[in-house]
Image (tube, rainbow, N blue to C red):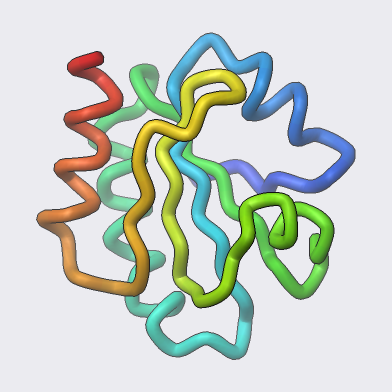
Length: 108
């Protein structure tokens, strides 16, 4: 699998201190649109492997991280470089806005 599970314990290592830009997916097992989003993110994670890291945060398991990102609705996909949020895609809108997020992270 080309995604990593992000928790409060490994957030700093996987996101803040990552050498690569990170796309963070906030999701929950009960969220239908999150399930639809998952295969699209997997595809992009494979395609951008070695250039961008993709991490998933289960908001039910990691409520403090969900709160830190001010997640009011999911899915919520956040493009990050270090501690800086570069862009956010709310909801499941298909592949184009996600691809745009990945491209933007590489372009900057």
